[in-house]
Length: 157
Ligand SMILES: Cc1cc2nc3c(=O)[nH]c(=O)nc-3n(C[C@H](O)[C@H](O)[C@H](O)COP(=O)(O)OP(=O)(O)OC[C@H]3O[C@@H](n4cnc5c(N)ncnc54)[C@H](O)[C@@H]3O)c2cc1C
Image 1: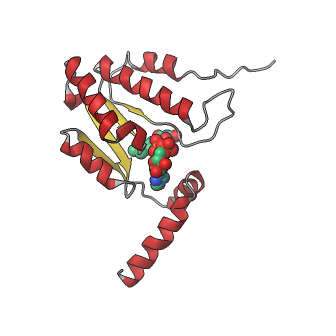
Image 2: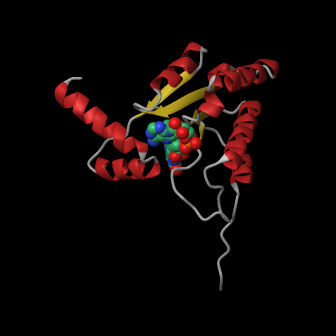
């Protein structure tokens, strides 16, 4: 018997979780999956993220937008999100922005300045090294950042 895995199911999943209480956190997903199951990083995934974000906003369900993507969050798209929120009379209190600690904190601050709630994601625990390896594999330029931070911490510059 072959087991068919559901593919590209996030829009349908979102409709289901919208029926339940609690905050919904929207992420692009940290783990690589076969392309017949999930969209890889790129313009198509970004478009989907934008559409799902709009769906969350207009549903008025409490939500958290967890991304560092400048295309989605820098001033012009954010103006668009503001306009959408105002036109639809959406409670700004229901919308939160989250980012990983240390990644583009100025962008999170910009969201805060617009009056949104913000949250910093800070992983901790005994198996921190596994999390670190995952983050480095996901975004290799972080290796350079980690070395720079370690030197700065050691020598204070
Ligand atoms: C608060 C929070 C919670 C999350 N929870 C989950 C979860 O529960 N499950 C899950 O699968 N994934 C989770 N993720 C991971 C997420 O799905 C992405 O893998 C990760 O955030 C990178 O995607 P992006 O949306 O920032 O956009 P991308 O398109 O990947 O990146 C856009 C830009 O952001 C910057 N950037 C992105 N990631 C990093 C980084 N690590 N370091 C430095 N710069 C970076 C770069 O400039 C990059 O060009 C979470 C992410 C956040 C912020």
